[in-house]
Amino acid sequence: MLGLKNGVKFLSSFALDEKSKTGYKTKMMNYSFAGVTYKGECAFEASDSRVFMGVKNLKINPSDALEFLTGEKIDTGGVINIDSRLGYESGVFKLNSIIKVSSAKIDVDRLGRMLLKDNKNFAGVPLELDVEIIIDGSNYIYNSAIYALAEGRLFVKGTLDSPLVSGAVDVVRGKINYLNRSFNIDSGSFKLSTLK
Image 1: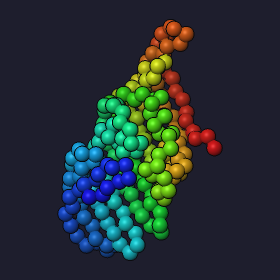
Image 2: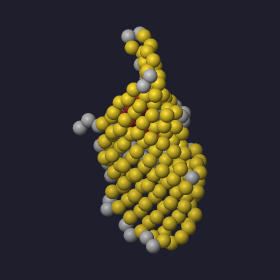
Image 3: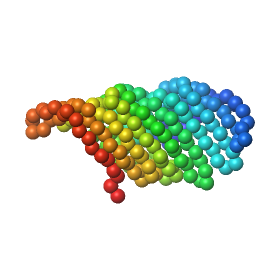
Image 4: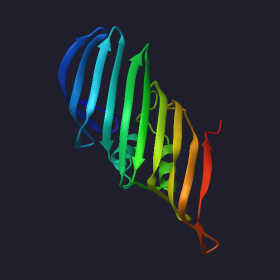
């Protein structure tokens, strides 16, 4: 069991598979995250002073993931599918992930406030990020002015303390309220990049 600073517990069951050329490999069959048990594939390999853990086809609720990251609960619905590899080498953790978000309804104002607040749970954690977030065409974004079906790709590089976000999101269709009038959105797009 791994206990994290924000009180979320990570439990797993392992089965030792084989000794490989680079160390020992094992597979994780079941794991529990934020009190919910998931099934999937995971490999763990340790050799010398390097450790790598990979997760394939991990399906979690976006609300659980956001609570883990921010310590705050937000109801989004939907599913996140994660393929990820976490490594430790030379005193630095590196996270490479592809995250696919499906069927979620995301309050973008609240999400932005949650992600931009000072999060002490991860302060000082030496983690380098290489994350791709794929938003498929079944996700809705909304706030007080907009409700829209959106899709796109976002990239998060840098570190937990100083993430660099880039990418593009396309609005497939939706509605926007402006000056007390409602307008249809036939299509639209916007690009994101972290200001330095």
